[in-house]
Image 1 (cartoon, rainbow, N blue to C red):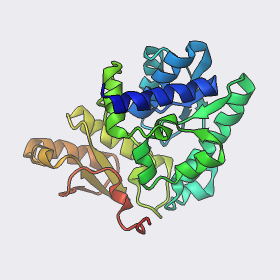
Image 2 (image 1 turned 90 degrees about the vertical axis):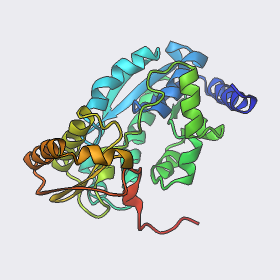
Image 3 (image 1 turned 60 degrees about the vertical axis):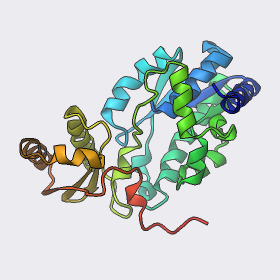
Image 4 (image 1 turned 135 degrees about the vertical axis):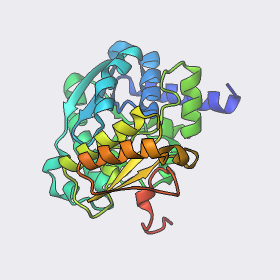
Length: 274
């Protein structure tokens, strides 16, 4: 490990030691998995609790595997049910939708932590996230949720490097943001839409498309896979399978985005950040 990254790792460990005992908001992604691993190493199993918010906005495959992953990382784990679908502001899907979702999660984690005697709630936010459009960061600030990876200046590439060096089995796992991120801003969020998206993306993953998105444009499914995998997706036999299955899920039209997979493609058109 190079000295710069080692110094950042030491800063995370110092921060965790200062906090003493923590609840980690655990999504099952590589960021929160690395943070959880470091927390257990630094504070011991009894000083850490991993908690996953459970709602229709999360892919079922993520929920199915998150408990086993936490155990593999040496942590105790619990689910907590979140209720963002009762909030009209979330359902309306404004550009700051993530703020309402994260507020719901953190407002439940904070009293849970206090009631169990944990001194802080942590998120796996990394330094690169601070440069992206992340309304949920405002919710974290308001709820006093700490982000040790970001505080130490550790970006996504460094997260993956550290995760690999520590032997995390998901060090190269593709990002899997909440399913609501596949619905264009301003179009209502519903559990039915999110089930369609989840089932469509599960199909693509089972067919070997490890990185993919199915953007939900009401009756239209817009599929994103890496550009070099588009030729395989549109091979006649595979194309027929995908189109038939997505039509069964309720989409009238199935399209392939020629620009390929890119995270946050629905953020196009948002005002430029200054």
